[in-house]
Image (cartoon, rainbow, N blue to C red; front, side, top):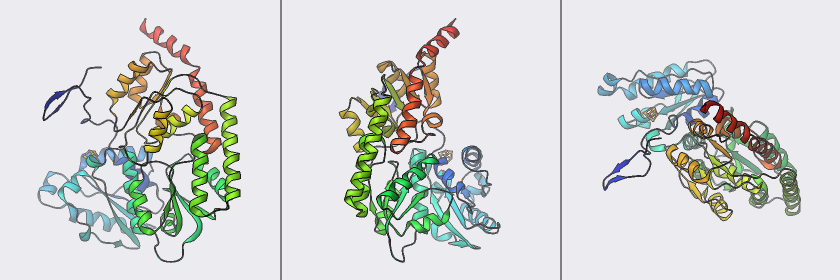
Length: 422
Ligand code: SF4
């Protein structure tokens, strides 16, 4: 691959250029969440090019739901019709049968042109109109755009009146469908009265979330949503129920924040730790694995793989460095990981393959292709790893079993490389 030079004010450097897109438009993260809500009819304020691309990926990955948008080409932008056009689209959305929520997703062009919130209606018909500002050029990754959408909905919809529901918790993060059931069952055994998983399909859950006692982000990029939760008076539980030590610490943290029965919490934490330890003992991993992706969860996966016995020298992610990910970064660096790269570029990941000669690569599709060309087993992180159960000991079992199996496939990949080389 050709080396790409980044030019800055002090001259040319040899660092990888991060100015070109490294994944699809980050705004997709917001749209995915907003279109999946039942009763939501999104309006997108953007120009025609963004509208075409984002509608396509949203239908492919999100929900089969039409998205309304004003016609915003050069002529409309020049004549200042961004707000008028958006108001007209909101009016049409409000007339749709059954619509309860109209998220107005304001993207790069509309944000640059100006979208004053006070000029938009608060309601259209029976539907709440919620402005979601997603200047994707400034948000950088689609996980962080998910956070922007959740925060906007919580800010507007979360109930702030009425009593707090004692021992209730909001869990934040898009996860494999079985994970919420298992986490809920475990928390109820500990004495938790109610769990609310966001973001899901229910608008009502965003309202109920305002009266929960605590919030537990399962993924480390929900900082805006956490700020809203703090402003409502909710406690925050850090970490996530991932791997042996992570799950143990998370259970104890939830118990402490919600004031649950200490002995019962300790019993559940001990049981989960014993199960996870037994899983690793039955199927320890060995080999060097590279974990890269753009989901924002890469550090947590790497930590689990290291606990299971793998050597993970290099981890990269699309999200920025943040106190929420710092505990995982410190843990990884204390357990043999040499590099943790935030806002990564494909070129950095490719160079890391050469540096560490891994036995298995998890990454984006372009990186997986590079690894396969070199005869290294490689998988698309999003479709193969992030689409399995992950949390608690049961999620650990599913993930480790999959990784262990792929690690045995090295001969087959080398055979394919030799076969096609001829
Ligand atoms: S201009 Fe902004 S919203 Fe449009 S595709 Fe590019 S990053 Fe996404």
